[in-house]
Image (tube, one colour):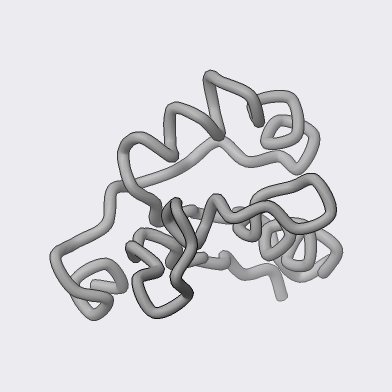
Length: 90
């Protein structure tokens, strides 16, 4: 059975104390959200991955610095986050 994955990464990351939104915090040269996407992409059961990220992060991921990596991972669909995490998930 094939399924889809929704990665919710639109939060500010305030508790993390980073100077940027948590989804874009670098780890080993890539934003955290791309590490999450890579883990889902490795699962054969995942047919599509939807990112829920801040509008500015969408630009970075699909048209900016990280566009090539997003393409390599087969990412192409992103939506903006809501006011609260539960809004983003909905």
